[in-house]
Image (cartoon, rainbow, N blue to C red; front, top):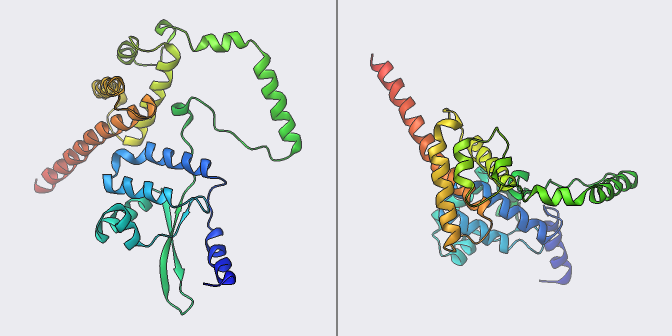
Length: 266
């Protein structure tokens, strides 16, 4: 391959770059897995991570062929294609077909889409880039004022005991959390509960699945205590709860279908 052809080769892929840096790419990978891991197969998760490792030249872009993915992941061609379809359906990747110079369609380029972890999980607001120098100065001034006003009170907010927990948080959840966390952490974990419930699309109210929520929390704490949680407890808890709520949702759907069948027979 000549130097000129190599330049054209890489230029074709550079146009699809979806992230500004590898660090930003890694954040998107974590965010996608945080939201979708519970609903994906182990093969799909492994293949998504593989794509991430081979998307660093132009952050977010991988041009591995299906056969190569199968070889590296030790998966069959059918498994690879099924996994890629699932990842695309979840919005985690985009697939773009390339064109051969001789004509006809070539292999796919896989683009990992940009995603940020929700604030209720990270505990930090999503940063917004200022649009011009004036906005930038305003943001810097705001941050300076924020950092100089009553820092002691801000720090102490994280040390409040469970008696300061906001009243909108379910009492049973507060009771389950208080042996381990104070008010601020309980508040953040409740945000995780609401995020998981919203994703589940359950028809029954959140209050009716509190036993499941608390069970997921207890199992997450246990996993954290025995060293099975590699990342943050909040992320593991979210995944565990999503999985449990998905089971309840499947039962809801099955019961609805049975009701329709009964009406049809009547």
